[in-house]
Length: 207
Image 1 (cartoon, rainbow, N blue to C red):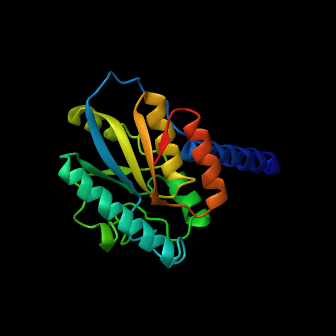
Image 2: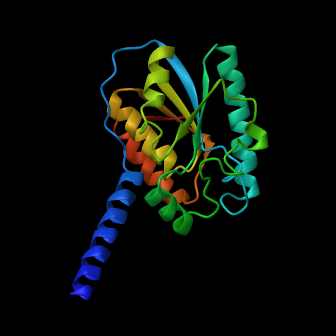
């Protein structure tokens, strides 16, 4: 009897972790937006936790830092808002999964959640996200509605994870999406090329 109970508990735990993992990596659908005139620059996961040799080599970081700096200057010139999406893992299952699968994952209230030094002071707004998709909490939806933004220029990292999922969620809602290639770091360049093709086929622009 005890082994049956333990087996059931193990199965339920496995199912719980599987569902959570799927939730972490999916792109939300959201509500279609009406036409909006504004444009925003979105900086994804430009944080201390990720801006290290363990995640991206020095040449990649230098390239992305320079490109983001140019894009922020351009956004300022055009009076367009700059929004930083900051990852903070929260909740028992997401934290457990992140701890074992994502090196140096930034946990809520942790020491490495802050924006990395090259990007500090760039953002007009900071939105905390819990999973790869930056729209998941609804906070980004609300902010973009207030700012009357209908077009997103996306930079940051990782091209195959948070950038890909957030861009897909934006397309699902009807935003115009531009991926700024030089301003995006990807841990797997070949996989990121496939992501660009997939998003491009849905209307995203790679610039």
